[in-house]
Structure formats: structure tokens, C-alpha cells
Length: 205
Image (cartoon, rainbow, N blue to C red):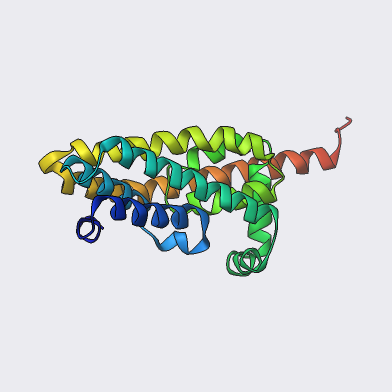
């Protein structure tokens, strides 16, 4: 992504990065796009004087937050893409994830903003679970700003260690996504267990 963006003038690179980051967090195709790599590359360009560092951080943060907002509204208004998502993931699995979000949607939304793939899916699932828009924004936007700004600064000031930083960021993303999925699974299992006990009613001896 670094070599790709380096082939464009600063303003055009910002615009291209903004489109990629919006799509990565707001469209279903985003699960295949390099979100973290794009922000790091944008920061790298800023560190080499192609554009201001503050512009890289601002665009990265704004684009990913806007994408998550779009994903939320798409989830709140089911359409063809949401039906395709349900078909691919499975309606039963979708319901289980939505159940896991219930009661813990704020923390889940904030945490998942930092991880690839779930950053794309969770805003839609948060909307489907009934999470209020203001609550979603309050949990998602600050973390999105920290994520975008932090990675942009890391790319700008990593210097000769940039390639190692990029590799480490990519490798860390895989176990963190697995951890996020595990947390969602444990939350769902805990809720199912509590609901099952509640359905049995009190035991009298």
C-alpha cells in the first residue's frame, strides 16, 4: 500500500486513502481491504514530507469513523447487502452475535474498532441489535480517532523500522481478531446459560 500511495501527489493520496478506509469500515467489501496498512502508509508519506502529519491523522480518523457510521445505518435499514451478509454468515449465527452484543454493546463496539474484519461487521450488528445511534457513536468515534491518529503517527515516526512495524501490526491483528471472536462467544455462552437457568425457575427442595 505504501508504494501504491507514494505514486500519487499528497492530496490525491489522502483522497484515495480516505475512500479505502471508508470502504474498509463501512462496506462489506471492507473485510478484504487493508485498513491498518493504509493508515500506516499514509503516516509514512507524512513522515517523508509528502503531506502534513496532522492531515494524515485527521483523514484516517474521519474516514474510518464515517465508514462505521455508514455501516451502522446500513444495519439499521436492512437491504440486499444485509441479506447477503446473513446468507453468508448464517441467520442463526447473526442472531447469536446480536445476543452477545445485548448489554455489552458499548464495550464490544469500542474494542472491535481496533481490529480488522470485525471493524467492518460490528457496526451493522450493533444496529441490528437495537443499540441506540448516540450510544454507538459515543463508543465508536473516540476509539476510531485514537486508532487512526495512533497508526498515522506510528507510520510517520517509525523511520527505518517502518517495515518491521507494518509486519508486526499485521501479525498482531490476527490473534486479536481471534480474541475478539472468543470474547463474543464467551459472552453469548454466558447469556445462554443464564437464560436457561432463568427459564427453569427457582428450585424448591
